[in-house]
Image (cartoon, rainbow, N blue to C red; front, top):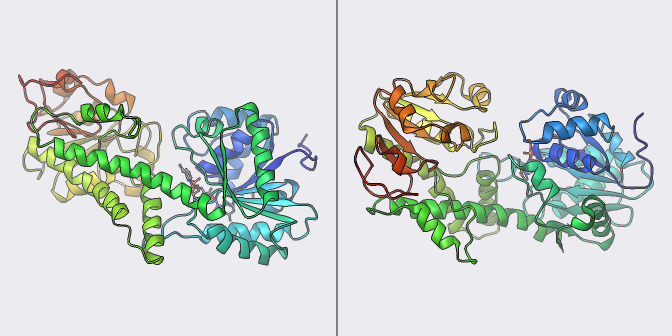
Length: 461
Ligand SMILES: NC(=O)c1ccc[n+]([C@@H]2O[C@H](COP(=O)([O-])OP(=O)(O)OC[C@H]3O[C@@H](n4cnc5c(N)ncnc54)[C@H](O)[C@@H]3O)[C@@H](O)[C@H]2O)c1
């Protein structure tokens, strides 16, 4: 029997069932909160209604199966079902425009449809903007669209909050169940109180710190958070690129040492080929564009992006240093996903590196345990794809580790030697202990000035 969503306890509707919306919906439902997921993608809805996850995310499939079976979560394309709940979250995408600024088309559309559905609702309804939106969007865009489409005034009968999401792909369910904070931006106490009550019901005694602010502050918290993390990555990559010119230096040791300072910390100081994924690049670009519109040119943020973009050059230079001119060389790309445990290739550093290697005439063969279907659907047969992590190495002149998959960590020096025409390896993710790869020509991001070769001394990691 379908749950009676008109009962007075909390019930939520989630508009947009992508990574964020679906993980949010599944976790709400897993805590017994009756949840309706709404999307415009019928195929996606059909899959969810059958308890199947349309995206690869650890723990999501199991959780979805359970909550759908218990009828705690239903999915529909009928937005009027939102009126059966007392809180609606907007979790639609906020992509970039070609100039880097935020595209609010989906936010406006979903708000308009929700507003129309709320026209006849008598009781109080809270609308929560969970999508990442630039400061001023909740009050300046969502509010007027909602008022116009619902015929109501935001305030006593219609609540509105900004409540950014901080979960990460690959650990989204765990992040949603154990967030380090909840940020609620509102203009009135009534809406903030209803949202806090909902989270109290969700988390019980484990309620994390709830930070209340204006909607604009809450919106900026999300951008500041992603921009800071992107800064840490570009910072340690800058140190790595300097370290590469100094004999006997290893950036991992530098990162570990500075991380002991509590003002710095250990996390997000892993040198590599640069950040990727659907958020960092998009959000830093949107913040730069927004800031410029306000009349302030954020030099630091632009440098973070440029450093990240250029990190692909560093990887390719290491390849050339070890393998010589790249024309007609066969290069193995180990990993296409932007990080391990996801099939997501959006903004992946592998794509930037592949692009540069192709321009230099290299012949490329790639392998990824999870992301090859996504890669193929976007890039077709621009590069050859291999069947396994051993297969990809066959006949290669150089191999590059682009994603830190556990499967690649298990490869030993002898595996590279057995398969490759020339055993040359660039560890762009620093997953290997260089001391164990002395028999290969080996280089890693941020590792000394001399590429290792047979018989050379490596500092143990
Ligand atoms: N992916 C992440 O790791 C992450 C983390 C934190 C925050 N965010 C932010 O959360 C938001 C959503 O991101 P995502 O990655 O889940 O997006 P996504 O692109 O994976 O999913 C968006 C979903 O919204 C649906 N949709 C579009 N218009 C709709 C409408 N009118 N009504 C109902 N559904 C509609 C789409 O069909 C799609 O299923 C973005 O603002 C993003 O920046 C993302």
